Length: 385
Ligand SMILES: Cc1cc2nc3c(=O)[nH]c(=O)nc-3n(C[C@H](O)[C@H](O)[C@H](O)COP(=O)(O)O)c2cc1C
Image (cartoon, rainbow, N blue to C red; front, side, top):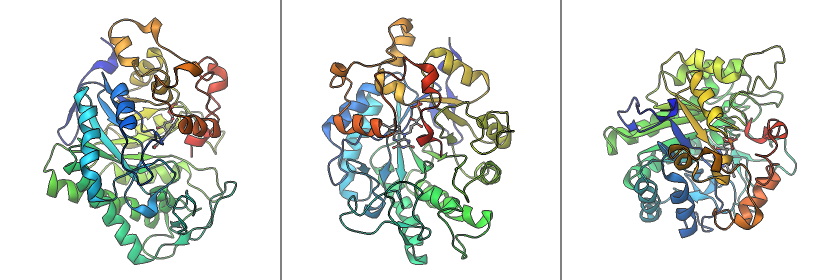
């Protein structure tokens, strides 16, 4: 029996049958208004068997929070019936269903928002080509957005999901409030590192209140973070460790550490020789379960994460290439696991051209990446900050 094949009970009381999760990955398959399509349901069904939990790709909590075309939405009550179909499809394969909820903040465009200017903590554009300058949110908008996370949590519960994950990573709005690059405010929401934590903590509390009111207990609340940014000013590991100290005392079920490679070291401090995930584990000090993710492909990769006492492993790109990863491992058919895909298998794998385009833009080629492990380790800076 592998270490990742052991059940665990989370702080909320939800029991997961093993330590493997599907990492949240947008499929870009939703309708223009964020309603889930049949193709998307098929994609999740294909990948759910055998996993302890499936975390869906990011779903926006407000229309203004839409980050890209084809994105899932949880912004309106009318979406509940189709979202319940998604939850049922995942649960029907025996996995717990977690929906990731988010707001894109400045990481979007007027084109995606039908002409509206993107919003963020402050009017500072991201340091990316063609980034648009967002409008700074008013105090009232901030409060509304926090409430929108609460309402989205209620919709997730009414849709029958087993949990939500707050997307506080990968440069989107929750991270934008924590980042000194995107947050230049001097009010309750910005200034000191403590004040930059206020938005994320308020979102946790809004979600928790909705869970207490509508789910009672046995509903998971997770939080995803990106430990560092490379911008100057930007989030440094010391800030994150301080934030994690606060998060570890919140009513959370897990902390999900988003990195392109689970063993990555500091992006900013070359003298730091320890993998960031181990520094985070030390800071959490067993107060919360931790999910490690990033370039895990083989069973040996997954075992290594478990060996270091990390509670869960999430599979991202490898599950795009090999939806039956867990089933093949369970049946002892590890040698049949696919580490690269042929172009003519894309349909069978539920990988649409828009997703392949997106993967190309972020420098991931599913046809080669698994075959070239050396090349792979430096490939994914896009998920690292
Ligand atoms: C196509 C694609 C879509 C992604 N979408 C999301 C997303 O919606 N939310 C999120 O938190 N991370 C997203 N990610 C990041 C993954 O969850 C994961 O952290 C990253 O791919 C590294 O893990 P891996 O090496 O196992 O792929 C996405 C990654 C890929 C490849």
